[in-house]
Length: 154
Image 1 (cartoon, rainbow, N blue to C red):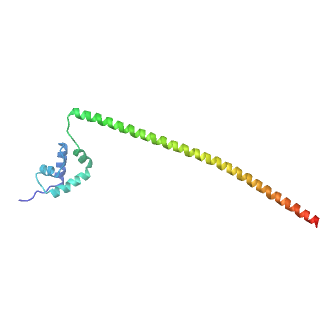
Image 2: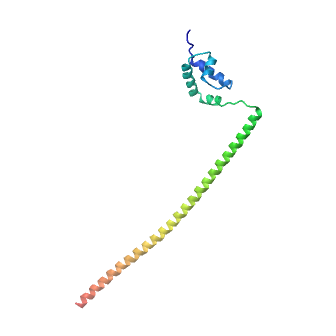
Image 3: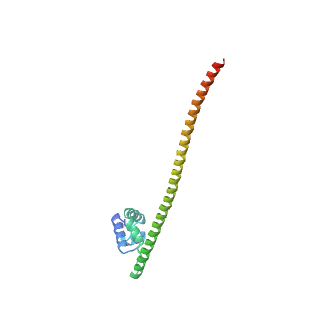
């Protein structure tokens, strides 16, 4: 008896069929749908299918049949949870912005104070330099006057 070889097309078709029936995708399920075949070969094509269509595999794996009333309540709960999470994220974002804005105002105030101190230091430096220049000039005049007095005394 020859072993049945599963083709890529058969595995892909089996996956599509199982998804359309909201059944879980498994090697055994695919093999059963095909009617046999090597698990190694089926697994190779199944992995390729999952790589090509990850959203289909993901969605099919999570389909849970439930009554309409449960589905309705689930959707309401999901919407409420989502809205609450969105509100929390927004309030956290606003708080972060307010905190950062407060820190920025503090830094700006520090910068303004530093600028004012720098201005005072600059004015003080300029005044000191002016007084130093005047002292040098006065020292020069006094030195010259002293030399003239020394010449007269001699």
